[in-house]
Structures are given as C-alpha cells and as structure tokens.
Length: 99
Image (cartoon, rainbow, N blue to C red; front, side, top):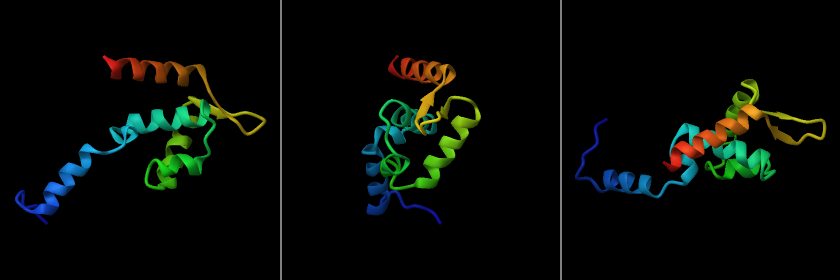
C-alpha cells in the first residue's frame, strides 16, 4: 500500500505525530517515563498504560526489561525502587536530552 502525499489521511497522520505525548518521542523516552512513574511517582502499571493508549503489554515489557538489567526492583512492600544504575541512566538521559 502506498500513501498519496496529497490525500487528507496522509496529512492527518503527519499532523497527529506533532501532537504526540512527550513520552512517545522515542523508546528510551518511554522507558524513562515508565521508570520515573513507577519509582518516583508510585503510579500503578494500569495508570502508566493510560499514557500509552492503554497498552499494558508495552508497559509490562519495559518493566520486565528494566528489572532484568537491574535498573529497578520491587522491595518487600511491593514498591518499585530504582537502583543506582537506574538513577544514573535516568539522570544521564535527561541531561543529554536537555542539551
């Protein structure tokens, strides 16, 4: 299927990308958003999924990945905690992004 640049649907698709949420800018931004929401804001996975069009699978895959690479973990009280590696990564990512 090819897209006709003169069709209104094509223009609408381009325009809608301009108004996407900040956390949708890149995969890393999505991960950063999820990490911050879980560890600093204490949001539930379902609440975070609302930021991604209720895509619970996307959120849980990122959570599993970040837990797997030791950026965060669940403590004995079932609260998500960012590890030092997770904190370093998030600070580095936000610093690079702001430059």
